[in-house]
Image: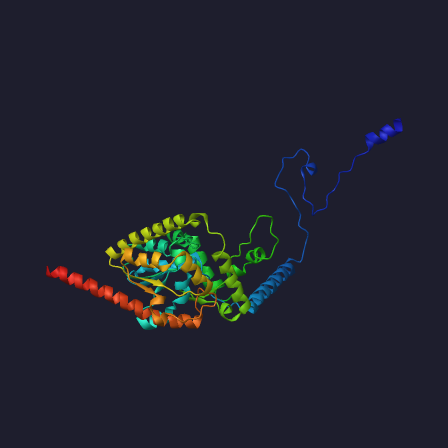
Length: 394
């Protein structure tokens, strides 16, 4: 017992020595206040690691870019809120007397700025927003005394008379855009958008993952987001993506997404005839008020109803017939309108997915539409001159 006890008393317990790459803990520093954790980093060939990681990044980036180019994508500009705000600011920078296009995707896709400029002698400012009623932009321009020019107002019945504004946040973005957001858009537009085809929201990895055919839980319905349909230039000059025109499978996909929306259950705000009528009246009231403000400032305006056909046109005719929407809009606002059904030169075009023209037909349509709109502007200007002359003679 004594010998054993002396061994225990004289033996010095050895502390556990952690390897250098393991972070020290409180037990390794008894009686010492806890400092920032220490962790030794073992020597590594860091230069080779960095260059190796960079090489893997470049290979993956090239593979992703190559995949989407093979799918049919080409480099172009993003239809971002920053891009819209950039064009909107042109009215604040001395172009307040310009011709401005507002509306939804039909005005955005179907009016080609080069062809309009060749006929009218002026390149319009493109402020149309896909999936969005033109009423919010109409109200924004009405509230801006800097705008005194000419206004082409696109009317897609489903959107205009419902007030739906998928891209409505673009207006708030223009008014609230921060310096960092401006610089981010500037860098994106000059460094990323021109060279890369994959740099499109529809090709983002999280978006691609979400739209895979995952099984649905009980009670859920699949909601297919609208796929890429457009190609856009630096000043938002836009046309339909060539793949929609030439790829039968992709065109069928685009049509199936429209059918899913057109024949799905209506939103609660318009699920009865009474509710639908109330919504239409509200949008008409907003439009009438905005038009009155713009007219008092001397702005000349023309409403335009671009073509649609197939299932989309049938839906519009059933839910939002012309007599209850378009005709009422023109009567209450007193603004002239150009409806594709009233002009043979605005008919007979190809709309691959029932809602937007092919690029070639969009150019032909623009060449036919621009003279009609310019003539309406000239009539309004002549009438205003006559009124001013009559007032001066009194």
